[in-house]
Length: 248
Ligand code: PGA
Image 1 (cartoon, rainbow, N blue to C red):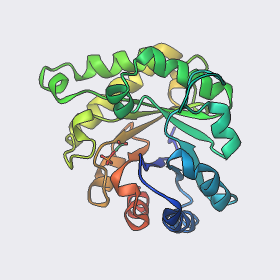
Image 2: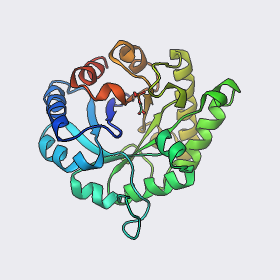
Image 3: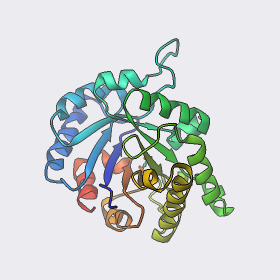
Image 4: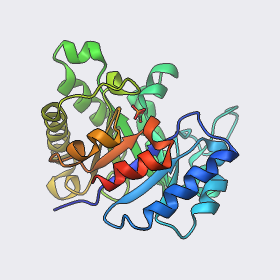
């Protein structure tokens, strides 16, 4: 069954109030792109304003991380309930920048995803190998292991999205070959089938992320088992993000 592609933007720690103009332009452009779903995950400080701006449009708004707990003494953290309260419908968990810079483990990522599902958010679970792991021939073992260990109870097509993001491709301009992406996505689909059964596994969208740009989006998005993109740098400019979305 053909899944609707999701084109998701991760603004990371970029964007202030002036950036709402880009969000408005993306939301306006999304109106014509009815074949796909679109999402922007701005910094937490912009979620409520962007959600208000995009209410009633085809552009959904998400968080970039959430805590596993519902509330408590966790200075600087944000809960899934807070994201919902601000107007988010999705949240990214386990981005490689969180796994690397904040030492998050797959067990923590799973707990965060379960907290997200508990609040009705769609969890976008990121996995991906480092360059050393790819060069050692460990890519498939690494990503399927991360998938198994990060997948929350209750995972299904309406609750989770998986984003395969090779760490060495993020923000570098380098991308794997189409054959490499197709190989990883086939392995991820097979792993989901063994974990969840074919019916459920077939409904979960598998995104590719890492240096997606207008010039490579069409090729990547046409690959089997690639059901969308998680876009960093190129999601900051409405024209680039819309060009990626239009390439699906
Ligand atoms: P990039 O980032 O598109 O800038 O490579 C992707 C990501 O980190 O999600």
